Length: 277
Image (cartoon, rainbow, N blue to C red; front, side, top):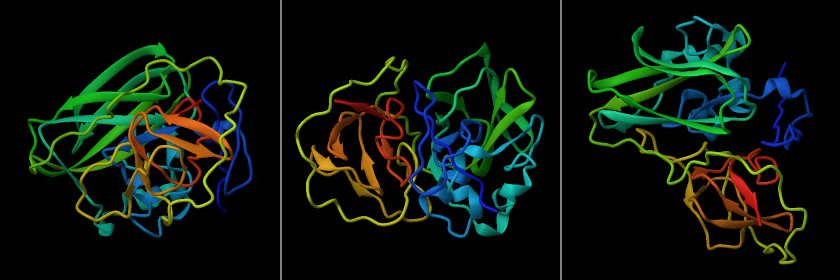
């Protein structure tokens, strides 16, 4: 049975859903969006037939201590399936991993491992993180195709969130990081909406595409570049910081570079990805 999806706003914890029944905020958490993790690739449609994870990439929650891509969570066993030939992002020796958090929890540590060896640990000392989190990790001790296990260890529970990221280290690419990563979220959104009406025609794109920041992968994607400012928001579009879109008659400005997917509409991810104008 498909799990219900929750999308809390960054400020008030309000929830809404575009494709499923609204559920408890406890089901929405976080995952590595770029370089794209396996669940991000599923949400983007780059890898098909992923099951429930394609609708809730942020929900790979399991007890701490697992070395599996799904953390041992049987609902998302597809993430452990190596026969799927997961596309690998070509990177240099230094990589910035970007997380999108749909519910922020007190954090003990963020841990990155390759083949069971810890590569980097970031200690948050039980602080509540921002809506987006980035870590620059030195991978100069590795080369070729590797799978990085990224783990977000929660500070006040026994749970952790897991993301596996497939990389081609030293493959001629370079790490990609958002042009601007928000460090603090506004306390509330403006109460008035602009009077400009939305365009009558939205850019034609199909299916969900992936999470923030585009990177080169071994498989082609169906994303398009951002249209002119003021164009209606659409899925499958690569937005850069400062781009302006309209959605349901309201204008929004991009706070973090990302590629849009259905269920990431500006009215849902206000303040994490979009700022109302």
